[in-house]
Image 1 (cartoon, rainbow, N blue to C red):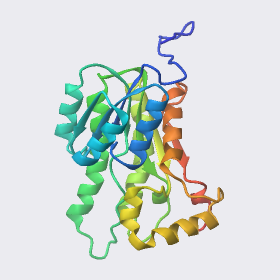
Image 2: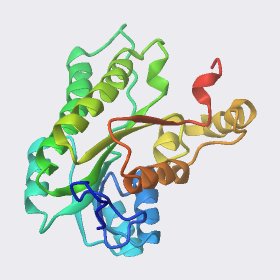
Image 3: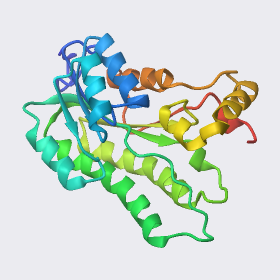
Image 4: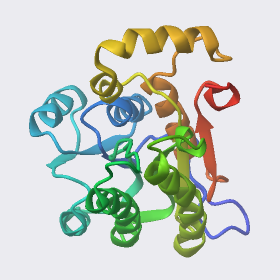
Length: 253
């Protein structure tokens, strides 16, 4: 680590060599691709995921420092995970948690409350329990969405979480400084989760996006991972929300 004159010694190298990144949600999609890019940039990874089999496959490819299979919404288990880390890390990225659509008509209030509370509690738990493990100038990096900014039937809970996460990120950046905290807001990303949600409608959605997005292609996990790596490396960035959606929020549907 190289310190500039007059700074507190938190400047970081412009790559990830000799740095360690914890990726929570690392067994597929954005998390797995981010772990790949970290390794390609010379960094080490610790992989966390819910599915032990998928996590093992990721480990065979990436040779991580360690793995842990559990649901990140279990905040007690999350606390234990950070306590058990053998040493300090440089960055923590959280991709766990998917979209949820709950129309008011027929809404299960308990499920709606659980979805809202689990997402915010997980974010706060990562901040709370990792703060003594992340090196100064390192990063906490969360994934949100741009889709929840647009009102719609079934979007109430998702929109509330979407609105809350940037404010939470900004406040955590102040409280955890000099650890940096940032949020990536993604639109549609062509992941296994998207495939499972859309089923036989996936190809039609891809074609629609290719025709309508300003970038004229579908956003893929590598696009989000590249932004994540940039936010880890650029030590002037904290407290911000960074969109990566191919311009999806600029179009009318």
